[in-house]
Amino acid sequence: QVRLVESGGGLVQAGGTLRLSCATSGSIFSGSTMGWYRQAPGKQRELVADITSGGSRRYADSVKGRFTISRDNAENTVYLQMNSLKPEDTAVYYCNAQQLRFPRYEYWGQGTQVTVSS
Image (cartoon, rainbow, N blue to C red; front, side, top):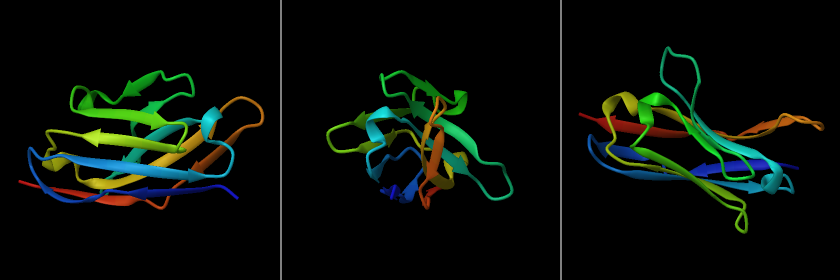
């Protein structure tokens, strides 16, 4: 059974930092593209950043230069370092594991709240 468990969310002032972690159980981690998505109230869920099994990264334009995604394949964990946080970063952040080639799969974590006060 695959489980993704996020941690590290919380309340922070604008300009502050947070580090999110997503621990993955099961045998899928090393072959998966791991991603962080977020959903603010009244908005659609959007990609924040992802990292492939080979280490290629991509970021949403809104977080480039402020957020960094990384993965530890030995610990089956993906991280999102968030610096210079802004009130508009406030959202529920979700961890995602996916593989688009056969056998295709996609898993989600339960989400962790990030609130940035002005």
